Image 1 (cartoon, rainbow over the protein chains, first blue to last red):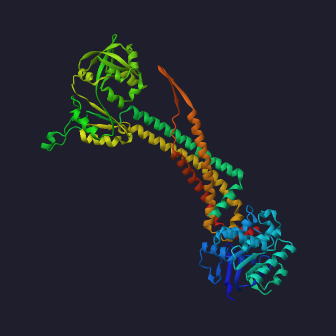
Image 2 (image 1 turned 180 degrees about the vertical axis):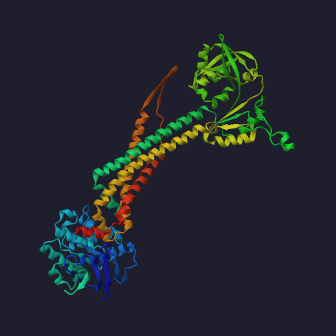
Length: 225
Length: 415
C-alpha cells in the first residue's frame, strides 16, 4: 500500500508581530484506503493541517508529498491542478454556488477539468447524485434543499473528478445527528466500497471512533489521544 | 472557457439593477460618441466636399515657384543676387496647346483653360472693378461648380452671337443691371468693349458674386491684348485625393506652379485634424467615465462573491481563471453597453438626420438644409473599441485583486 499523503515536520506559522503557530512539526503518512479522523480541541490546528494537506495553504516549513509528488516547488497553477484532479473537498458548510442547480454544481469541477464530454458529465453527475439519494433534486437550487441534502451535494461535488483523496473539514459540524450519521455513512462507504482515502476533521468523538485511524492534535502538535 | 463565461454571466445577472446602470452608462457613452462622431465627420465631409466642389482640384498657373537660376550663377561664384522674383510671364503659359496635350495624355479627369485678367465694368455711370475670366463654356461646365449656381442663363449662353458676359447677381444689383443689359467692360490695358449680360449666377460667396465675370476665352484675350494666351489650367480629377500627386507630376512636367486643393487649404485641413483630436479626446473621456461604473459593479461583485471565489479556487480553479472570470464580466458589460449604444447611436443619428434648418440671410433666398451626417461603420467600431478597452481595464483591476484572494481566509472566516 503506497502512501497517498506523506508529511515530514510540517509546520505552519502565521507571520505577525507575535507569530501564531497553527501546525507544528507534524509527520504522518496516510495510505490509500484509510479513513483518517483528525481530532483535537478547538484551535488545535485541525483545520489548518487539513488546508495544508489540501494545498489550500503553504507550509512555513516541512515537506508534503501527495500521491508521491513533492509539493514544495509547485506553482499555484500546478497546485490548483492537483486540487482539481486528485483532491475532493467537503467543508463544514456546503459551499455550493447558489445560482446554479444541484447538477450544475456537481458538474463545475468536471467542466473545469474538461476530460468528459457534455453527455458523459451529465451521466456521471446523475449517477453520483442518485447514489447519494438526491435523484429527485437534480434541477433544484441549493437553497431549496435541507442542510443534510446540501451537504450530500457537496460530497457528490467532491467526487466529481473521481479523486483518490477526499478531505472533509467538519463535514457534519452543522448537521443534526440523523444527517450527521447519514453523511458519515457515505464517507465510510467511500472508503470501504470504492477504495477512496478520506481525511476528516471532526470533534465528534463518535465519528472519530469509527474511523480506521485517528490523528489527535493539541496546540498544533500530534499527541496521543 | 465556456464554464467561466457561464459563471461570469450568472454573477452579472445576479445584480440586475446595478448591471443595468453600468450597461446604460456605457451605452449612452457609446451612443453619444457615435452621434457626435457622425456629426463631426459629416460636417467635415460636407465642408471638404463643398471645398473640393467649388475649387479646381489642381490649379496650374503661369507662375513659377522659385526664381529661375540666373546665368551669372553658373558663370561666377555668386553669393547672393538681390531682388530675384519668380517670373510672371505676360505671355501666360507658354505653348498652351502642347502643354494641354501633354496633360491630357495622363491626367485622370477633366481640364479647362482660362485667361484671368482684371478690368472695370461700367454701367449707368458706375465703375466696378472685376475679375474677367475668359473660358471655353463646354470645358468650363465640366470643371467649375459655377454651372450649378446659375440663376439665369448658363455658360452656354456665352456662345450665341456677339459679345456676351456672365456676371454675379450681386454685381448686377450693384450696377442696377439685369439680364439683357449691355454694359461696358474696360480692361487693364485700356481696351473697351460692350458686353451683353446673358447669365447671372449666385454662389453664396459675396466676393465671387460681386467680383467675377465670365466671357469667352477669345474675348478675354482680345481685352487683355494677349492673343492665344492662357494663364490658368484647372483640373477636376476623378479622385480628388489624388490631387497632390497629379499636381507634383504636372509641375515637374510643365515647370509651372501647380497647386493641389489640399495645399491651397492646408491650414483649414489642419484645423479639421485638430477638431478630430479634440472630438476623440472627449469621446474617450465619456467612455472612461462609463468605465468607472463598470469598475464599481465588478468591485462589488468580487467582494460579494468572495466566498464563491474561495470555493472555486479550492475546487481547483487557478488565479488566471479568476482573473479571466472578472475580466470577462467587465467585457460582457462593455459589450452589452456597446450593443445598446449602437442602437442609441443609430437612433440619435436618425433623429438628427430629420432635423431641418431654414437658413435665411439678407438678399439670400431661403435655403433649407439638413444636418450633415456621416454614416460610417468606423464610428461604431471605434466607439465600441474604446468602450471595451475601458471596460476591460475596469474589469481587470478588481479581477487581479480577486485572483490573489486566499481561499483559506474566507473558508476560515465562514466556519
